[in-house]
Image (tube, rainbow, N blue to C red; front, side, top):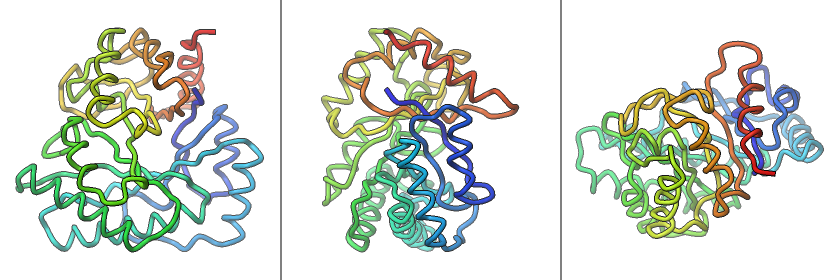
Length: 280
């Protein structure tokens, strides 16, 4: 398994490769723009070229881009809904420019609508974006913790979404371990990991899984409260992660950590911990 982190783009894409090297990354995830605002800046062609060259040189491929936080393709509000579709279209294009193979999309919130309607709306929004933007970037649906009115915290919901996607060859899944645990999938034991992966394979297909977000949970099992924590320091624990990263069904997948970064050394400690769990 190749390990890495979500890397900040503060100061420009030229800063990313050095930050990844400092954290001993083998794979990385980035935003293509400020994730907390709707606007975006054009990506200079020369900067994109140098960035792609750096990815190749440091063997940091495939590249994963994460969508901003604001879009909600499950929203019943038309203004937010169509704005979110435009955002997805933009990020599909930006991901291609940056050399990314995958774009990670949060499954949204139903707000005051019904779950079935929210699933239909989300799926149709993805269909609209994929119909408009024809490129090789695959959209990865990220599972949620089920916090508030979030959908996508059960495999059955993710399956229902994928069933409604027309271009299924352009869709995959990113499983976040903290979200899984907080949603009610127990990852603390070998049996729990096995049961979770078997259910995913039965309902969606393990071939649809392209990335793991390796995060411990600061909140208890089935809390539906989304709080990431350091590997082995949270409620999943070291044993759970040892079973996860060595499981033959997912051993070859990349694992991106989105663990808290408060002080120098946090990322390196998490990297050391996760690598120490691999059976040699």
